[in-house]
Length: 126
Image 1 (cartoon, rainbow, N blue to C red):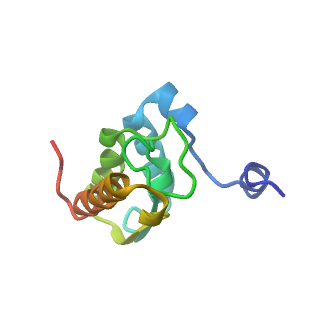
Image 2: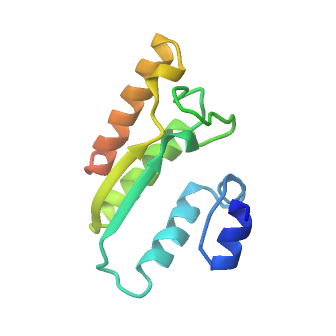
């Protein structure tokens, strides 16, 4: 079964870059957080942040680099909103692979990932 079919069949609430294009990252994050906290506004959240969701111009050292991903600001906004919710219990940054890029790209991806971690801990980039 393909991923999209499984998501649809299982009734999983999912948002794509098309949703971000149409509604903007703010509205998409509002919809996602509303969905997650609808039944229990104090439920703990685990965030698995897949770095390949970010545009490879920003984070190239990943196995599935696809142009048109999250911008620098959008990526941080996701982390900032989850942190501001007060229910973030744990988080991980995944799919970072410095061996898949040249030195500058590897360094940029690692530094960007570290920045996302600070946003998840409550620091705002603005």
